[in-house]
Amino acid sequence: GKPIPNDGKPPTRKALAAAGVVSQFLTAADVPAKDEETDFRASAALRHIFQNAGIIDDRLARATCAAPDARMEAPLTEPVTVVGIHLRRHNYRRVRGQAPRRPKLVACLVAMHFTPDAETPPYTEMYHNGRWLRFADGRAAYHASEIGNENWGRNG
Image (tube, rainbow, N blue to C red):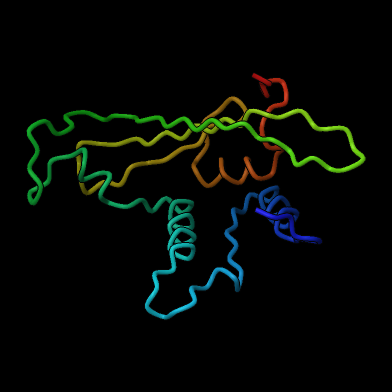
């Protein structure tokens, strides 16, 4: 949470995203102290890389579809789209000697398209700039652009 002087991650992520490449970063400080500890940050990083590639955990499809090994009372009978909405207020750090920057509202929408077939992974898209994009393209567009919208950054 503390700013890192001359941190190359934000400009590198933005430059890669402008070229349509999504990125994931880990640092040496992210390595667990003991071998037997679970490396949650590395696990999350791998999960994000898989998501960008369209590889989604099969538990989602199995939770919504009947499969021979997991019978359900009401499985899907037709395709379904589930949309997740994530909203947060982005507040800028106060810099001594500079006027405070207005907060921005960050809105992210992700759609997952499920079929009744438990063996078919969901297709995932992200909404950006008025259209739905393949998830990796949407994430790249998100990181390539300015975060949030100042006009929506409510003060209340």
